[in-house]
Image (cartoon, rainbow, N blue to C red; front, side, top):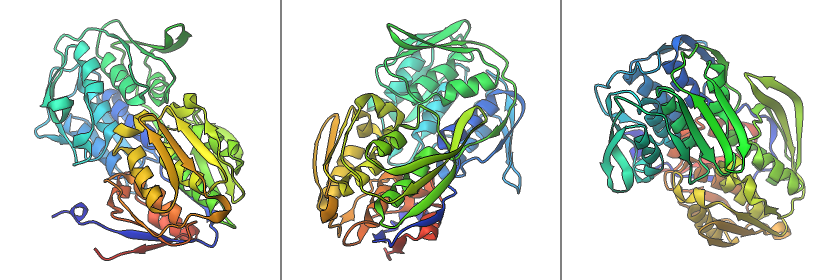
Length: 449
């Protein structure tokens, strides 16, 4: 029995105010892509600041299984000796991606135009998530897929032996779909084109250019048109991974809702396609400032300074959803403490994440005394304001790290402690979360299972 087979309940108690500096881990999206593109380059790519959570470590292991030589030095430097585009070998065993939806979908794309067979699986949560959104466009290149109903894992992919370039209009605003298509296009002749109605996070395009690929982006009447020229030779890079804005969301929001808090989160990546939450917080009246603005590795970076203060509910512009899709759970926690109603529209993508995040947050918030409304694409939270959130409930995490961390943050401002049924999932993306937050002044308590 693994440690993850045993639930690890945890409770969060009202905090007197968080103080200090929060050194959050490296950006998960950039970390996944650094390993994958490093494995597809010729020569040695060196990476510092890599997020060493279970999701990213799983991607490193998958790249090793596909033939890349990947090592980590004692000082935290990762070295990736790539095999070149089209150079992946067939793995000796099943590739287990754990809980990493980004990892498995990007790896599928990277391997889809190489004539090898790869069987993918994952944990119970990942095996429930739809893969058809990626396997459908990858099949257009010539890849074949055999899996469970709905295209779910376990799934075996046989890469295209004679790949053809693809022009694909993405039906969903998903950086994972876009990235999988672009990675597959690397080993296809000619130009691969991906069209999306609204812009999604552009880490793949930025990093592909850094590795030497030709990628253009154009806004047309069709939408955002991304064109990649296939069969380049990727050049190895030296990459400094910025700190993860999705991880920064938790200490930032915790500071905004805990009376007396004053927290700095340094070195956060502020890619415009990822920074929607921070603009939303400012719209709610948050005392949040950017300091020491700079650029690192082609990505805008700043130190975030968050202080407690009064907040008001707002209607979040639906066109902002793609730039903050992972942050709606923690935003709904802050909305529960604000004055007035917060309306979140265009969020149906939340229903096919590690869990149905709208349902998970709605049920937990209701149990803690917060009134909510929801439909397939909308989530409305009626803030408790000066009355305060009663709390006192045990909330189900559904093996979802963001649900777990969000409810622990809620407990910091609730009248009674908030308990989560299992904190294990947090290790997938933010392994230092407990130590970092308690170091700032959070009061977490582990509960014997």
